[in-house]
Image (cartoon, rainbow, N blue to C red; front, side, top):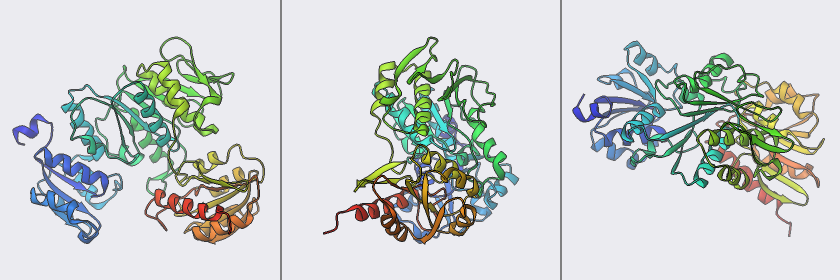
Length: 464
């Protein structure tokens, strides 16, 4: 290990598996710190631009494309993995056999940021099955309104490694997925938030218990002076024991020492005394699921000593995120809502809460994540008039929901939107909340949401 790397707590050579956004950001950050790199990806070299490769290659990085074999690891002291790399990948298993630490990009970036800012950063980490992106962005909005320097990072879109070129202390507000938490080692946020845990990603995790263990790791390295914000209404998260101070939130009952709803107001006693923050009706985003998100954001911000007026302003004026129950267009009394981020059963169930009976045309489908569509059928029976199915999971959905709600096979988004426009009448909502991954027909959920939005605008446009 060179003296410079040793000063930074980094080894002389790191192997990186996965060269998408997080892998590229980490590679650049490590190269700037004189770490020798070996970089592997299952895709062919031709799928990357020369600008993504040339600078690193000129600096001595070795690339292994097309499904790297064990030589990627030769000479490496760590294996860094992107979130898309499963722990049962042959290269990961080989690294473990060799005794190499297998670390998430997020873990390594956190170590670098902490060392270079001399421990002066404040860290908020948010995970959960649903609501984590909205909650993460909402916390960042509140802290910005309090005048804090904020970096919004992680699974929400910008890898943590991308912030390492600036070495000043900040508030890092990070969305952390189960895929990232699988490969942490020392990561210890000052405030850790768990929104909820319901079955998801069972196509990658070894059952719900394995998925739940990964989520729970967000609290693993916290100290007694840290804070653990936990959803007291969620049956999975409520019993979790933590070393950190436990801060509950609840939309259903008083949450002593935490945040809750009381007579239509959001209330907190996290700082040691009861404070009324704002009326529930003033929240920027509607719906029961967003009330939970707001309480989690309030709790996290209050844990950091944020002034009540900044918390209230952030909760009242937050603009929300695209693809998360986003109103795309309203025309002729019909609302078109994009919830493409609803990639699991529980997310779709939450999106259906509060609709009048028979008022929803629901577009479902994509790549099955082994969800329980019979459970969704029970939740959809009252608010949904017709389900339109798309993608690989269409047949599974149709069999599970038959008899509970009217189901039609559309196949593609174009046909689903066209049929929805025929079925919809004033007072209805056409809701894309697929309860599935997007990767059968789209690159990601954002592309799926944009396609739906474009088709919705066209369907809602006045005919001339």
